[in-house]
Length: 432
Ligand code: DSN
Image 1 (tube, rainbow, N blue to C red):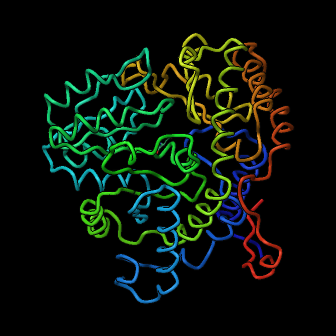
Image 2: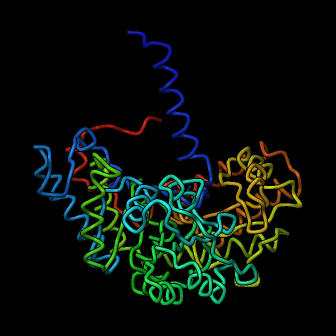
């Protein structure tokens, strides 16, 4: 039977994507990762076709007796891993988690303080995104470019002056922990709450190499579950504040989520177990790799604006490529060489520079998961130089990148599918 043309096209595109990103590219987007084979198997289940509105054991639909138990187990695993009392897994993304929390803490017209977008705040924190859509008024926290962090003294004064409903910390370009303790003290003194968005660093917190903001005074943390935490795409809220948790969990559904994409839950639980087992080794290697890579790029002639601060303490760092034609040009040349990352605003860029900002953002977490270590990142830095400084044809470098990637095709720090389960899996291989 011949397939309709459109179907052939869909399958071709899907297969091309899978081959390219999974086997031929070096993936350096700071917000992405790859699940283990076992988590991928646990993701592709009948649960993706089902509905479960409401909370476990109190659903509005029948058919959820196993889903309920998986959700409760996943919640328990995440709360043990993060050492917090209350975890809410139903937000289907970090942005939805932010929406739930922001709406619980403020009404339209109220004020919130946020890190400036050029200094890495996520768009959902801002007037351009979820915060603005909820009618909450954004006031920007002062940023200290020398320390590449929130300016604590000025922020404390601003909090006292503005008396916001809440202060949002955390960012999408996040090399150094934000000063949660100091900001929480100032916020609490004027009756404001502190929301800390840890989407980028959740895996580092789970691995014990980044401070958990809830233990430092934040009232509530929001996150996604697929950046340094290498789980399925989804959202998460956690807190030790019982009253806030109760309010939040009453409003996730029906305010912002109907069905919460149930097939995420077993995959998330598998990843939580993996992080309990291997998280410390993985997270320490991520940070070592990030520093080694930034150092190597600097040695090859690139400008890393946080060099004077020891480059980074997270999975990510930025490169200033203004002298090389800007972020848009550099990111595209690297993509042509099968090195995938994104252009990024740097703190001095005006918002309108978004189409060709000064920077590139680089995250090492996914390639660390595929087994790359410090020396491998030093090799990778040479490909960057060939493309961006030496001006070599990206197509020539691409051949070397594909060859290089062949050494890093298996996910580490996670579980394979056990032999005795292989026969009982529904066979849905990834299209290649
Ligand atoms: N847009 C994502 C990032 O790349 O940081 C976060 O949602």
